[in-house]
Image (cartoon, rainbow, N blue to C red; front, side, top):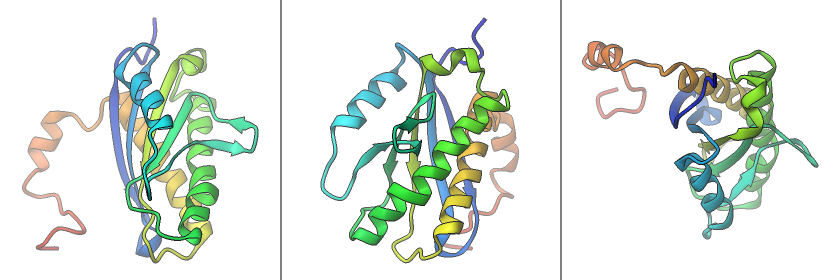
Length: 170
């Protein structure tokens, strides 16, 4: 029986400074809204917002098929290279490691779709950190999505004690 039978959502914030990675992720099976979003996202680029396939290297896309999209407008070539280089490699490697480690069942990988929203700060400068943090945040997001975490009860319990690092009162 399939482990991933419906659309699941994951999120993770990893790292610090301008290279911090904040990933919003959707994973779902063939025939689900995740597949529809994947197809629509791949062909509906807008000025400053570009989707791209997550590839480990040119001609080696990760499986499940994974679409990345930027959450902050790409304003210059440096930011574009960061998205199409270290962030892309980090995301793709995290997806494939999740398959290798059994987080995503290998026998389901060809029939799943993943969408990954990537945040790259406009002043990010350290490509190694961008790659590392996006890898870690993507992998954690996948694990949370597949496991249905956090549960509503946990979020409810922590709603008044959890600290948002960018909240007005932070």
